[in-house]
Length: 110
Image 1 (cartoon, rainbow, N blue to C red):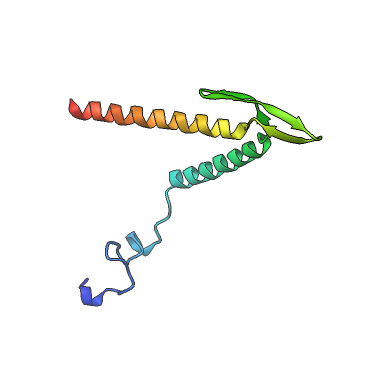
Image 2: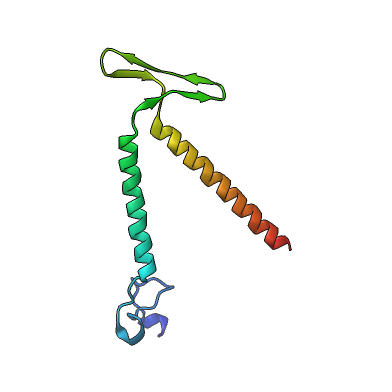
């Protein structure tokens, strides 16, 4: 196909045909399953976050937080449990990423 015959609105790196035999190319099943799993994990995380909104006592490296009950149901101090869970998840993800980078670098050096 010549450049003069191309559709000007079509991206340069994509073919304008629908694929082999003129049929639409569908998303692979594994990609669809992955997207559904990602949405499921996000929904479960949100439910978990809402149900774990209570404040808890926690000993940080630089000090301690304590939950104090004031005036009926009002709570001050402490740390929301979901914050601790997110920090722990982030720390685990960071360690896993650093280890995978180190492993890839070590393999590259061989």
